[in-house]
Length: 481
Image (cartoon, rainbow, N blue to C red; front, side):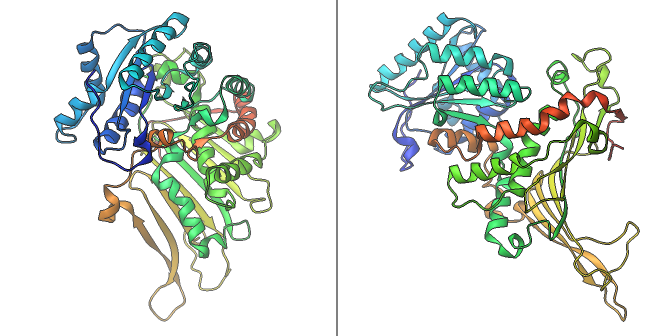
């Protein structure tokens, strides 16, 4: 492997050599997310001056075969990167063949990392990313710890960190079991639990919008807000993920993590300071206040659906009743939000792909300058558009010109793409997460308290889903009733 190129940078991340180990580098996640994000960071000179990427997987490759595989995974568009940058990036990569359940393989991996340290003449920082199915977590984490790969250097000059993807467990019991195991093997500051939605720029902008604009934060409560609707719609179907998805379903796949992460940011109280511990604590506090839906109220609080044709998808079990759509009516039982419904809605094979949050404000001047529309009163709605076309819009009412006192809705809108300095400055969510993992910032990673609180709310729903009718809907549906 070619000696890493030195960069001119004063960023503290660049001051210590670091090895990024991808366990499962031949998998889908590494190809779609990790490797493109690492290349982007490399092209922007945002990785350490000395770094290496070590792939670990069961397949056997020659050096050239591995480089060719990675080049294909990167899926670079013409002109996206300089060919020189791609070549130098590949020069930083190496591969160790091994089996996830074989202790000897981890010993060889340790030797590989030691060889890199010896060449650099110092102990490096090490990040281990588990780019594997969740059922492999426990074995891999145990082998990493037993082989001492995750121990910092004897002279304490190099830290080690573990990155774990969602889903973190399958229910409250498995989440607690995994968390107990992690607590025995690693320190909390080593554990980075990824929910990539927390790293989306437009989602982070919710906090800036709320807490730096007092005109909104002052009315951010049940006294002024009627309801909140959180939507995560996907136009695509399962593609080739049938076998994986059929064992998980939409509620586990999106509800327990992405949807509740968005709810927490919308509903959390203002933290005492904008440091990691305070922000994560407030997110967790909101999730702890979620009111568990009792079995007897499930039919009036939850809707589940499945798109027509799901049973014909490759890997789906015959007669499967796995949901591809859900809508949950949730409530936060604290003083600020008591009685305000939070609707969580997500599904596949819908009319469009979009993620947005609608905040509906209560009518404050009933009967005054208010025109009735066909569907009733015209509410003020504040929308956070997470993707695509990131931005914020506010629907408000103005008087219709003329001699009467009718009003009609108009919209104020902000879009990132309309601001030239913003348009090309939005980092990919995995770029941000990898960057923060290098720096040790855990703000955008889920804490133990958040994971357990979210499962405490979701598990009773999952356990009782089969008592709900499974509503069939056509691909491209605009709504599921």
